[in-house]
Length: 94
Image 1 (cartoon, one colour):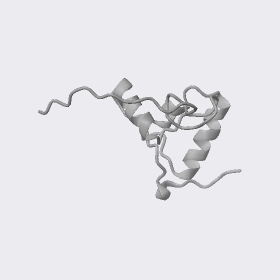
Image 2 (tube, helix red, strand yellow; image 1 turned 135 degrees about the vertical axis):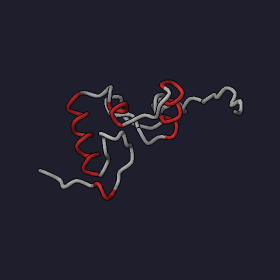
Image 3 (cartoon, rainbow, N blue to C red; image 1 turned 90 degrees about the vertical axis):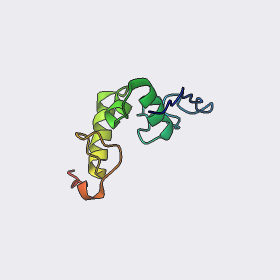
């Protein structure tokens, strides 16, 4: 087994979200697809982030709106996926 040493991660530049390294309003979700967010979350929690993690700080109505849109785009929330699967795209119900 190789000794991987200590990993250090530089913070995002000023003006970007310090949690995910992306530009968004504080009431909006973190970018679950951000490389910075993925690495930082893995280092802190020992697992990959999900959209539920990225949405956790948002108001319930924002969480539901994002969840609906991501499911429409083909993201499988139950599987913890963060990227859309075009084959899993749902029909939009208006």
